[in-house]
Length: 262
Ligand code: MF3
Ligand code: CO
Ligand code: CO
Picture (cartoon, rainbow, N blue to C red):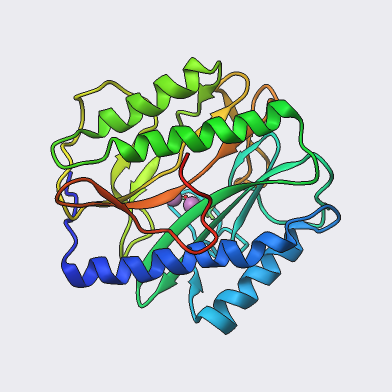
């Protein structure tokens, strides 16, 4: 397994891409409302990327081996959709929880981040799931430092989420990122402390736990992309792109509208 260590120039490129990805979510935030379709959010994002940011939507026509090209400029995953929800004509409604996941390419570098949005007044349970998932991501990020292991990140996230009665989706993970959208290493959101790759300064990867209110099992819909919980329970996800620094970590996907760390 080869995990690239980024040069100072590459790190600066990734800072720019990360900030732009986060600013894109800031731009979308006021529009994520009842009555708005996820396709409308997609189109707003696409126009902002292409015309304002001069970035490229990495997801549009993204086609990993065995997959049809992904047909949209972001992912919108509503309620029991775990990830990779395809924007469509369904309107967001009061009480929905939706993950919006964006990946922009700027000067060849990828910035990948997602947030949960609560539409109208969600149930206490739905808000708690989003909040716990957010804190799980942050606890994972805070375990990042040189000499720590990937298993420390996964174990921290798993212990926290399962400790609140939730489950971790196993089939999808964080990933190295740079000039490629998905590169080594795989960053599992479960595991055992002290196991797996030892972290070194210059590594860049995402931390993006998917947490289900019910059982961990998932199913893929007939469109070949949309992942849902097998038991139809709610699912939440948050994502940041993170650099390993000499003494800890730096979150690259930050902007004025980033929610404060817990
Ligand atoms: N942004 C997602 C991630 O965090 C990947 C989406 S791939 C797509 O890795 F094709 F579904 F858009
Ligand atoms: Co990602
Ligand atoms: Co993403």
